[in-house]
Amino acid sequence: DAKTTQPNSMESNEEEPVHLPCNHSTISGTDYIHWYRQLPSQGPEYVIHGLTSNVNNRMASLAIAEDRKSSTLILHRATLRDAAVYYCILIGNQAGTALIFGKGTTLSVSS
Amino acid sequence: DAGITQSPRYKITETGRQVTLMCHQTWSHSYMFWYRQDLGHGLRLIYYSAAADITDKGEVPDGYVVSRSKTENFPLTLESATRSQTSVYFCASSENTQNTEAFFGQGTRLTVV
Image (cartoon, rainbow over the protein chains, first blue to last red):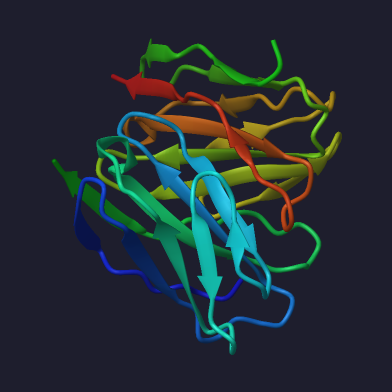
């Protein structure tokens, strides 16, 4: 699977938008972009995923660059509960692929 | 209740003992996964399974054995536990690996003394 690059950490204030970047310059045309997050002392949870078009759900938005070499997870109004490690993961269409987690971005949210 | 459950939640075992961690999902998802997470580190894939009786190695399979005789269960066995296997273990399931979300269990905290 192609690799991703994320900043180690980011800070935000409560109720402000947060833009979490992810670079994936070697992405292939069939790789899906997934985002997961892990809150302290919990298992990872799915946030959002997309292929080419921007995606929205109740948790977040995913903005995918036109060349697909980068993407941004957008939390529209950060809350204290959004403090977590956010992982950007690429998934190919080969048989037997699995989620491989990198180091992710640790998001801190201040009140 | 629908979901994915791991048991036990906490386990202390001695070096050299065999221990099995259980994972059960109620959705009949095709794929199941085992990860370990060491203190202050990210998740590493141990083994995964695409269907009953089909398993594949992940990033760190040494010292672990898995089986999948039924779609809903995916036990992970440490045949002879070592202190380096002290970790938090997460199980996950998904319908496919590319275009659907994976659901994670609450984790099993294993301590090998």
